[in-house]
Length: 213
Image (cartoon, rainbow, N blue to C red):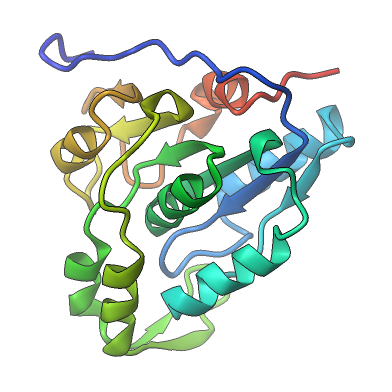
């Protein structure tokens, strides 16, 4: 741990969680390693919890509409939103709207800037399916960006200094005041994918309000 970086202990907000939604990143899918690890854990240890990990459309506006509709009947005070990369940006937007707790895994801070270079045809990581990221999606990202983080105690951000895609310093600044776990650059799995995510699972699950039964 870098001693210059404050690392608040993650303490789960009060209240039992009954619903969890996992949001994947750009070009990712519900078949990502982290999404499957979460799904397997919930299936084995907490089958009573409602779990949803949808395939998000390329349009940010459509992605948020899908999530608002799919979670419309959920008790938001007992919902945890978990998001990776671009999904972390979406998770923040939803947590601010819903008042839910959120776990953010190398969250995108300024996707309207970062994804401006991705306009055009792309392919998904897990099935190589093509999709088109349109110029108007940049404006959609700008429109949904929360102005500020409120109730910082609702958030846990897991940030890798070794992230090769996003700047960990921007993430740390954005979520200052929240519970933050920084993975040093030389730590196993300190990369954008958090490739040794099993090491962070216990803390993430605890903050999300998930304990085995």
